[in-house]
Length: 354
Ligand SMILES: Nc1nc2c(ncn2[C@@H]2O[C@H](COP(=O)(O)OP(=O)(O)OP(=O)(O)O)[C@@H](O)[C@H]2O)c(=O)[nH]1
Ligand SMILES: [Zn+2]
Image (cartoon, rainbow, N blue to C red; front, side, top):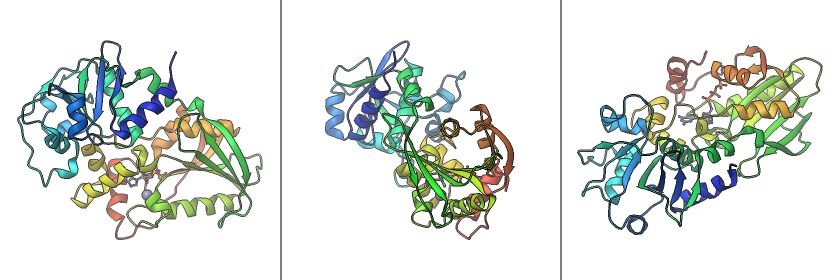
């Protein structure tokens, strides 16, 4: 039996700076997220000052800890042994790559074997879901007062099969007066996904756009990316085609959340590109789960589509989710001086066909 709702409580706990226990197959660990902790919470979590620090593989590369880690699992998280100088301030500097330029890192760091690899991996997943930095104080064993989850609970929480249609209504929009909005949600995730059905079904495969949430681009007109213009152009193209669907997916920052995306932007201000910024923060280059889009299309009764995208990974992911993509329709817009490097990085490093 899995308990996906326990994951919602664990995410809440991480954001509030409360401990969370993860019950792995071999051992349990109890975590305190460094970002939301403080010296008082740390002292009550770890009175003997023995808790190790759990970091992502990407962060371990920056800290030159990779050669100490078990070779068999290249992307495995890394556990750093506690040293007397590794206090709350030093741990914060370990957690947050934005501080690297300002804070000379102490050391030496020693990677120690992971007692519960599956639980450690789940910890990083929870950090992404909670939108916090993937860095924790870790104690072996299950703390009785901590919210407890298993890796299977987290997998169940992420299962798109939990998504259902909540409601639908007519919604004329600036680019398409004939439109209907459909809202989808799961019992435990706060963010609702949206489909905008545009035009009238005509027996042909609909033209579909998967748009990932981008608050800065969609609402503020950010020039750092191409999301705002792509959103408007997608609605226009679908309306022009006569029939299609815009999926608005709550996958802000390619799935790492708004705050972590803004941290990636701060790293870009320091000179890193969009790919390296994500990796240095400790996240995947693209953490989106497009099974969600597959499930939404299934709930809308669409098994064959034409897809507006420059990203072949979206085509592959939809096909894997059981949706046939009969055509990829390019969706490139002219660059501006602020997003030219971002678009070039997508072309050169993430396989976008621009
Ligand atoms: N982490 C991170 N996310 C970003 C950055 N810039 C934009 N995003 C997010 O990226 C998502 C948009 O994805 P894109 O990679 O621009 O485009 P795509 O959807 O993969 O591909 P297309 O279908 O061809 O547009 C949105 O969720 C944005 O918030 C960035 O520098 N870092
Ligand atoms: Zn954007």
